Image (cartoon, rainbow, N blue to C red):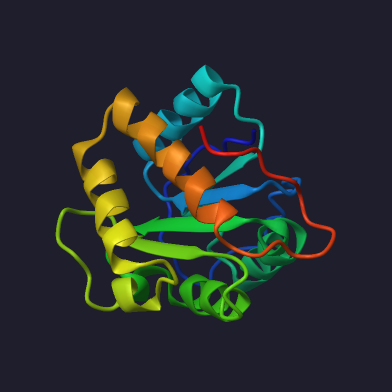
Amino acid sequence: MHLLSAQAATIQQEGEAIDLAQTPGAFIFASSADSELATLAAAADRSGETELRLANTLRLSNNLSVDMWLDQTVRHARLVCLRLIGGAAYWQYGVDELTALCANGRIPLILLPGDSNPDPILQPRSTIHPDDWTRLHRLFIQGGPQNANAILQAFHRLAASSPPLRGEVGCAAAG
């Protein structure tokens, strides 16, 4: 598992490109909130999950950084979940590129707001069923170790329902 620490920054095209150098994994979760990244990292540790890749969007402030991350890591995933504080406009290039990458429906895409208010822009751009989107959004809002465990289980279930890409990373069955 790869957990990248946050650095104070804004999500705009700025600075030099950063290569996160993450290996492919079945599940991708990105957020600018270290607490969310740490909570999912702990859930992965508890469950023995080795296919979760975590990224802080603050490290992806340069469009080239986003492109490298998408090409090297995300395109091999079985599921991508992005939680955005500030909505799609906060990380527009990343949201647009993730949406394009997942448009074929082979990689479920979950775009969640970083607060408790459902986002009328992010929800329709997600490729999972609205009921699943609402359930995941609620789990993130409620927080805590048990909900983090449930989030990982949901990732497995949602990824298992999508057709695999040829040559992609394998995924354990949900349990």
